[in-house]
Image 1 (cartoon, helix red, strand yellow):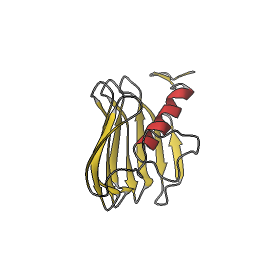
Image 2: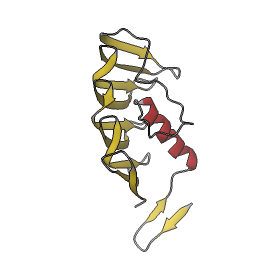
Image 3: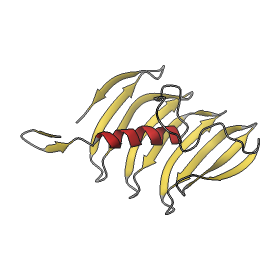
Image 4: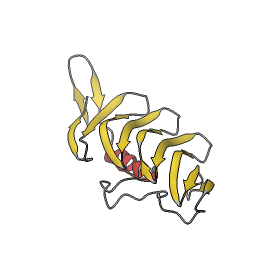
Length: 152
């Protein structure tokens, strides 16, 4: 679908693109506010060692790596596509997502950026298409509830 204005033309991403975005959010850890039908590539609960560095192969050929402390993710975790390019970067504190997260398109351009607070989406999340154009903004309150969504 294309929406036009007098200054620019904006093409909304296809529905599968939003499904992929939700799936990637889940792959980065995902909070309770994520849809039940999203299929995570990995979760914050794993059968990995209680402490130390973890490198885990993902079903699609990519990998995810970071540190475990007392059986929980801690510090910055990185995931990579099969070709080795960055897929995501997210920080955990005591097993919960905390701070800025960034997820990338396979091309290396940013797919979306946002903030977590105690495992919940917080503040403004910005989504970009594969050419780097902003396509959506979502604003979350301190409880992780979506309060505003806008398509530029």
